[in-house]
Structures are given as C-alpha cells and as structure tokens.
Length: 329
Image (cartoon, rainbow, N blue to C red; front, side, top):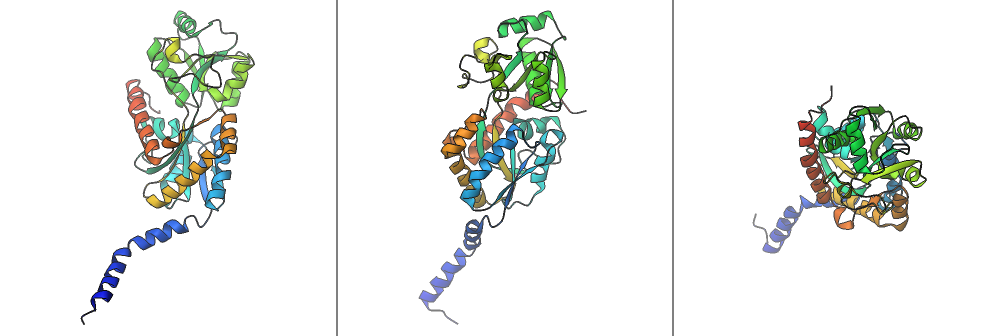
C-alpha cells in the first residue's frame, strides 16, 4: 500500500523521535521516590553533617525525601562499595572525598574501581588540612618543628584517624619531603585524637583545619602551617606550607557526589542542578561556612570538574603511595 507523502513524513518523524521519548519521560519523571545519599562514615562527623545540610535543600528542589544512610567502616570502603553495586537510576548517591575516591584505590584491592564504577555529579566544598600540635610543643614555627623532629628521630607521635587514612598518607609524604621520622598513633575518630592532643599525650596531627580551629583560636592547640596554595580565610595569620619552607605540600578534604556507572546523563543533570541550587542558597552557604567548608566556585560544581579533580589527585597521590610501598596488610 502506498502512503500519502504527508502521512509518510509524519510516521517517519514519529519513528525518529521514539528513542528520544523514553529518555525525556524518564528525565521528567525523575525522581519519583526517595533518594538515598550513602555517607561512608558514622553519624555526627563532618561528612555526615554536610550531607544533611545539603539534603534539606535538595529535597525541596527535587520534591522527594532525601535519606541519609550511614554505612561506615573500613575507611569508607563499605559505604562506597554499596553505591557501586546499586542500580544506576539516580536513587543511590555516594558522598565521598580524597580518601574514599582516590587514596583507597591505591592502597586496597577493592571490589570496585573508584573511577570506572562511578559517574561524577558535583564537587561540593573544600576545607584545607593543616599541621596542628599540642600547645606545649617547644617549636615556635614549622622550621623549628622540622629541626626538633630531626633531633629526635622516631620519638615524636602523630595522631591519625584509623590506619592508612589520608592523615597518615600525608604524614608519610611530609616525612619524605622533610627528611624526618616520627611514629603514627591510630585513633577510632577525631574526637579522641584531639582530646589526647589537648592533654599532651600526642604531639601533632595532619588534620582538617575546621575540626581544630576553635582550639587553635583559643590557644589550646597551635597550628604551624596550612596545606594550601593560599592562606585559609578563617585563620589568615597561619602561613602556608610554601611560606613555612615545605613547598608543594598541598592537601585538602574536598567533598563530592557520585552515582553508579551507567546512570542516565539526564538524571545526573537533574541531580547536579538541584545540588547547585542548594550550594547557591545563602542559608546553606552560611551553614557550610560554620563547618569551616569553602563551597566550590559555581564553575567547578560540574561533573566534569569533579572528574578532573579526581583524576589530578590520583595522578598526584598514587605514585607517592606506590613509591612509599604503602599497602594494606
């Protein structure tokens, strides 16, 4: 049967549009049920706190509840692994950082790939790390601290959260850069670590500046240097590592969001849009600032920017870990 030209063109146009229609419908329908953000750390910690602040606003943008699920243990590997195995539909989201989505990939034999099994959604925020110490430590600045460590090889103690976490990796890197040696003392969490430092039981730590800022401001701890290219706005009197004599030692606790590999692009775009709206909200920005977090510039809140940062961090830290022969027992 020969179709009239007008009807033929109409049917042909409809056929071309068929593959597109389900994608459009899927994007418009998402989300149709609650979304879970998996926090790979215990409740009450900095990552958990920021996830909950973010979730309050994202819930409004997406019109669905945002569930925060704390799946802690094994340095974040259990929680991240759960998202890696989840359906790629945008309903399971991983919040992670330098440790969970970079360092763990070089240290452990993981049942997932930190890059290939995920799709980036957005970079969220960043807080610098700094070298903080008990107030009774004799060194007045970083140069004196390095000299003191060299005079007392293997005697000083540096606190870390867990074993082979980012503070320990950074500490090993610091040893290589400065020719010093000291012992690492693992703790189950930041709270007991800093309690012991306040009591003078351990000497120093490489930790989040935001976590100890109050103690430094009150004079109960001393900060020697910030591991960033520029001084931290909250404590502008603390020099950078570059200024203090250890150039190139940059490290921070940045946060990002990922979804399982294969999640539709339009779903990632929808999530990213909701996250960017949250990060632009004045209340969210203030609450992040209260936690010592610097929200990433808007142009860096893209999946591409998070992918680029993760790639750069892998290229930086994996060779350091390999050269130091750091690996899980």
